[in-house]
Amino acid sequence: MKQDNRHIPLRGPQKAAAFMLSLEESSVSKVFSFLEQDEVQALSKAMANLGVVDAGSIESIYEDFRKSVSQGTGTVVGSIDKTEKLLSQVFPASKVQEIMAEIVGPVGKNLWEKVETVDNDFLVSFLQSEHPQTIAVILTRFNPNKAAAILKMLPPEIAEDVVVRIIKLDLVSKEVLSDLENSLRNQFMSNVSKANRKDSHQVAADIFNLFDRDSEAKFLGFLEKTIPDDANRIKELMFTFEDMVRIEPSGIQEIIRVADKTKMALALKGASQNVKDLFLNNMSERAGNLLLEEMEAFGRVRLKEVDDAQADIVTQAKELIDKEVINITITSDQEEEKYID
Image (cartoon, rainbow, N blue to C red):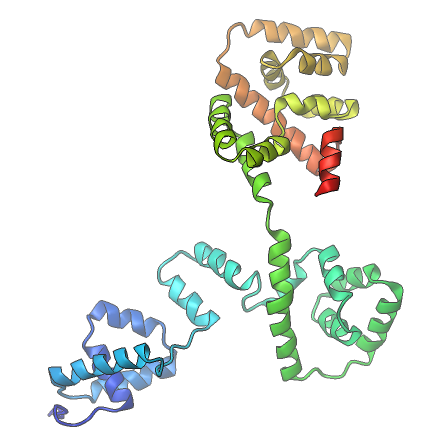
């Protein structure tokens, strides 16, 4: 026989149990998904033994909750784990990781593994301002290859001190390690996030580089009317097929070597005479004549085909520039702007 709790004041787990039983089943399952196993067991036991609770008591529970929250006397405890668990109920795993990375940086539960993936130059810059004992503790958490690379890059006097401290390092207490991990999360990883943040103008320029001519003209025209300074900055950062004239001759020869010859001919068919001459002057006479013949053989072509071919060549050129296989020249105006910035 079920206990009648209609006239008995509910307390603690009983109030929570009554609240849960007043919800729809789908909501109850969601709440349970956010609880730890021991919490689920305690709440389930209270629900099973609750008995009958009248509507007035349920309303009173809701009212108590409303008052405690509105008056600031109630507490809602948030944590990284709870937040991640909540998000996982709504979003796929890849999206949850992306959101959590924005919140806490690329750390999460495997802090030391994530710190190891940070660029060595950035790590060294950060560690140089830390106490040698702290550096020693951090390096002992890395794999030997990473630790060795960092030690070689540190100033000799710091590196020597750190090596001695590594050798003489006693067992690090859990409290010290926890404080260090919190420091890395709060200080170091936030700096990593800022350092890895791309310049918004460069992001826009990279997008504009992939537009066809009509789209590029449309969006740049809009920006020139609304935010002209930003539009000019984007145009400076864009690298188009016409910017090939800024690449050194040896770089043009490398592009000619790796590029698809049919795409190159199609791209040059819609290029300015300066760009055409640039490519032809960096080819043998025989190769140049073959290129001109192929360009002529295309006949009338759609502008979109030319744009696509130019975009492919530009992508290859930018990859070679990023890898420092080829270099581009910088105009005097650009040099001055870099100096001012």
